Length: 205
Image (cartoon, rainbow, N blue to C red; front, side, top):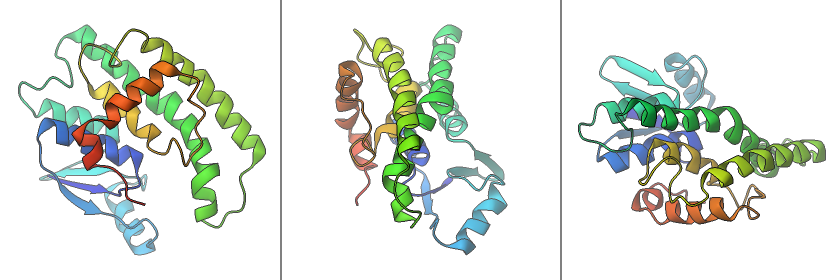
């Protein structure tokens, strides 16, 4: 299987973390997002023009959480994606939550504090910064409450829920994400960072 990816993509990192913990080798094809020809090629395999994209023979799959679930389903006896219906629904809940709420809030701040200047788009917009911080604090409180008395998001061991959420925080310092007021989130993220899989997929600036 091959994965179209970029080391700066938090969504692609979700998939790489999952594959690493499943012991599933992937051929990584790095897409240079600054190259219009490569972007055009990406749009040919994913009309959304987004990363990551997985190719498994003649089957092509995009959307990072769907790819994570697919890889888990291909792996017998894996424990990242529970078989029990309620336990799996709980994992799914948090995968949808991060995609719909937490990651978009993070994205506002990382765009304004990192990517905007890198793309020559001017300085950060104070109104957008305020909006991003307001939304991140709202949803950060939700995650912090969920992690009260827990090591991992949905159970006693790491699941796809953790792997879907954690890459949103890969730019916690550069993006100036105001999460230090959430001790449970910060302690959980330290556990994530201690994983070999996290260290193996880290971004080298």
